[in-house]
Image (cartoon, rainbow, N blue to C red; front, side):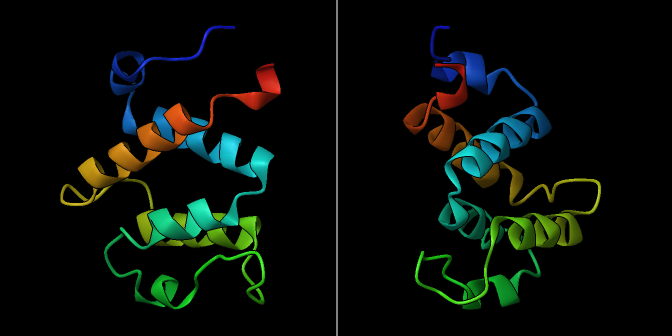
Length: 101
């Protein structure tokens, strides 16, 4: 399966990008990615206290996803959406779908 290009990814909705990036980060058990995108959400001050490093105590992928749902609800803040899209696209370009290989 060929890797997606920037233009192909940029044509996707923010939600589709999020789903793909989250699926890839779950597959890679990349807690740090989740915490990095959480920090871009409004009212996510408590996420800034968590660094998501492998040696940190407590944060897990499931906790990060739960926080994401709590902070975003059913939509994206217009101010944070461009940064989130960029983060999702960047992650997907740097970490192509390993499960498909």
